[in-house]
Image (cartoon, rainbow, N blue to C red; front, side, top):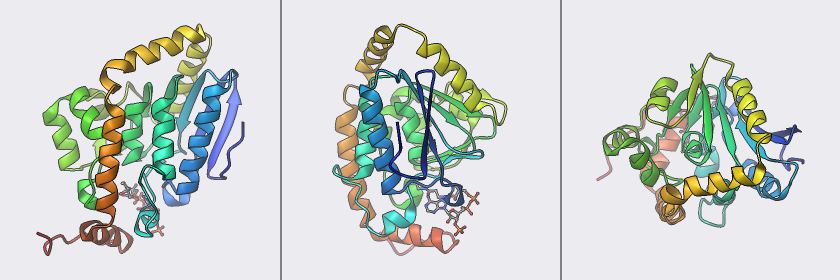
Length: 259
Ligand code: COA
């Protein structure tokens, strides 16, 4: 299988498809082309009998810093027709196990996509953050629905309202990731698990994934859509413009004039 975008790299071995986000000079920030390429790979992999498991990873020291903020400022759509939504939908619908290997920063969708993976392994120096409120935005990818269910309301409120960075051990404690390994070992551990899953009975694996998701994820799609509508409106807001401009100008955002 081949990627349509140089910044999304793929390798295929032992019935495993490994998708690597590769834009290190921008901390692997995701552009529309990158989302499209990942969505296409997932759609193709779902039909391809030579793929039984997918690994999603980044580069050494960074998983992804989330959506490219310049893209958002430039008015790239995040509605249901957009590549972002296409990617979210492709991962949400993906019928085979997806294993994430997180090294370094996993910000925004870098954290929320883990909620839609089946196993997530993190290097012990990985750093997670869902800074939506800090950016004048709102939660996405059904995170406002899934987080309270997997970690309880109090912890979900803390992570979403304060938007602070948190470490790998915290991510494991609140069930965002399965396992924390020494720095630099997450990808190798993910490959070990992928090899193990790839040798199991494929139909039994797919059915188990489907059954596991049936309860918690049943309403997920409605939430993804509802959040996407709000998110799209927030991107047009003065609050977001101030936050994203402040990031580009390397200064703190000033929300004092907003009511
Ligand atoms: N969108 C666009 N550019 C980004 C980016 C993003 N999401 N994340 C990083 N970059 C750019 C930086 O602007 C910087 O560009 P420059 O070299 O022209 O100054 C470059 O990538 C390196 O990033 P930098 O911030 O210097 O790295 P760092 O190691 O100090 O911090 C992060 C890493 C991930 C903590 C920080 O870059 C960050 O907070 N990024 C924004 C995350 C975000 O808000 N994502 C959107 C969520 S919806």
